[in-house]
Image 1 (cartoon, helix red, strand yellow):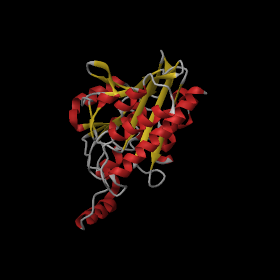
Image 2 (image 1 turned 60 degrees about the horizontal axis):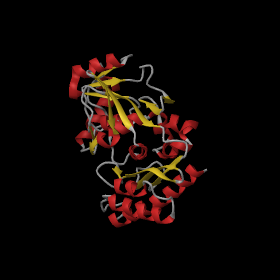
Image 3 (image 1 turned 90 degrees about the vertical axis):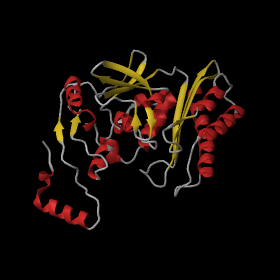
Image 4 (image 1 turned 135 degrees about the vertical axis):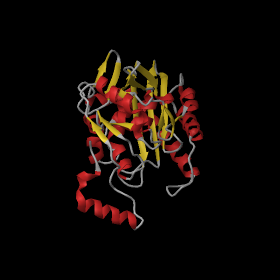
Length: 313
């Protein structure tokens, strides 16, 4: 049992005085802490607490919310001691990213180059080194922040989320996983155990471009691009956008326009135009909606040129 008693009387008094002056608490509400050593044990705990429990992997999204009391779960289920959830590998014709694979693991991985270049390009642009060392890819996707970088990169690759619950395992296409800002298709007693994507083929490439006000900031605009070539034409294209909609936005019309097309200037320009149309940005302190749409267009064009060159090399 973890309680606020662990901060000591001086900390409690300081926190109380701060709140009396109109501040916001920086200590989480009381919760119970569990550290299961198997997925089944974790699922049993989640079933017991239902909506009142949260899964903890890297904690880089959840812990700040708890400190501000935006989230106040009754129980934390820490899956960090469960063996077998840290795999980053190709298996049975698919790339698999386990629930405990960190952003830094992806940043260092030689596997996420070339065919999976959109993932390799995304990893070093996620937040800052402290977050990348602790935060996990699956945790970021499960958090469902519309400004999350991994959501776009994995959408561009056509990935799926693997969730395990009391009734067994199920695979959820990523485009169906996020139903709104910070909302997903996960049931209360389910755990994301991995994210996987099919092998895109030998002639494939991709990248991720991100406009941020400073290093480590959330994206003002992000564009993830992936291309697979087939006999000199574009066999499949994936384009997804960050920060310009209530979820990561899949630019379906732009993808469809590229399928079967020659990888030339006209096709790239048309896809970039359609991607900008798919964006749903808002005017805010980061820029006008018109400005953000133009960034989407420019980044899509740049990204496609980079992805096509990588696939052709």
